Image 1: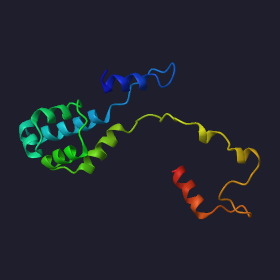
Image 2: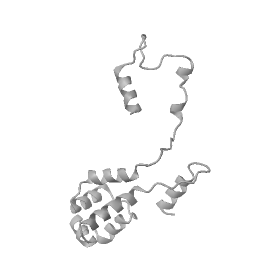
Image 3: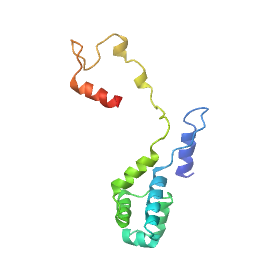
Image 4: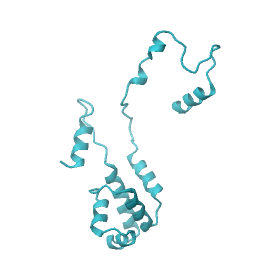
Amino acid sequence: MDGQAVATGHAATSRPGAARRAEPLLRHVMGGILRRARLAQGRTLVDVATAARVSTAYLSEVERGRKEASSEVLAAVCAALGIRLVDLVARAGEELRPVGPVLVLSSAGARPSPRAALGARPRGARTGGAVSARVAHHRALVAA
């Protein structure tokens, strides 16, 4: 059984009764980005593989998402294409970012803590009710 079948089976059954599309694998997204960059430059697999010092067959497998390339290989291919590795990763993040609502995996934040249930003062709160600057900053970041 390959990685795609495992990922598809797991993601499709994560919510009972809900039919949803499985998230793409990172190797498929990155491979597609690399292939589009190569084709946009009008370059061949042989040309880019030679410049990156990897085999043509391996680069083809990476572009098709069949091989999980190491960070060293990805850096070499990016250098051969004249793009930065950070831009490849950022682009992959953009393509993986969900368009719709995000499924909350944990409901721990939804339940009151045992301290709150007992009427205890929340951590970080002072006697006068003022919240420390660090806690206020954290809450502002979480709310954003």
